[in-house]
Image (cartoon, rainbow, N blue to C red):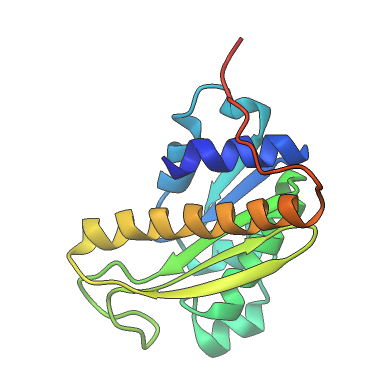
Length: 172
């Protein structure tokens, strides 16, 4: 139930969300879209599966991609910042990694970076996930949503004298 909570927390701050996805192929965006009323918060998502699209669509530094490959902490951070710029969102979420079965960019299957960028904080987490391709992807979606909820919730608590409350996000 992370997606509804994330949308509610973002709505409570008056923030919007944009999502940049690679290995998750749109599933983070789909998890958000599945929540009634998501359109009040979700600006959109970009699936930049090919490395050149990360640079062309999201503004990830091409030299960084050439040097380190797409599965990298700095790439994830730039994807999160880039989706904020592309969509005009307050919060950017990003996923990049290796779902398997083969290694990519020198990284083993299960190595994933999820990133979140907000107006007050940015963070990247490395996830070392076990399981087959579908499990790695599902756990990556969960990891991205959980990191986003943490950063959006912390920002709200730091800037509020009121206790955290999760307003309902529904279509009216």
